[in-house]
Image: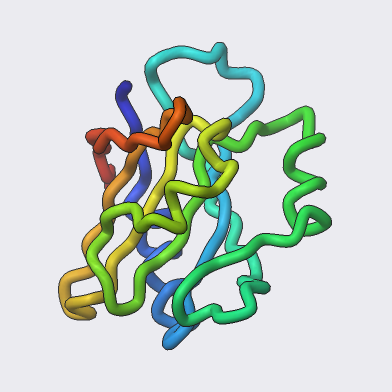
Length: 142
């Protein structure tokens, strides 16, 4: 799978995550619905969402009412779920792997463990008897 993300969208994800500290930030990534589903994702929009988790410093939760407008939007489709790890590496946690987000093509984690060097990783989650994750490559353009 080939994934393309603009520098501007990357910077928006980092800024949203920094503003959310000490809590985890979350959001969704979309691409135009007119694009034919393929092995190439062109991320067009990052939509920051509020983290409603009971303990937002350790997990994230998105309200269905916050995400529903984007699920039914005919102009764009959700191709990624994003969240940050304020103090941990950008590797899916056990809690990340137990979510139902495996139906979304990509799962993005931004580590702020070293704030001067944020580390963004993208995964695909596959649900079988246990959830597995696979790191994906991506390109940040200008």
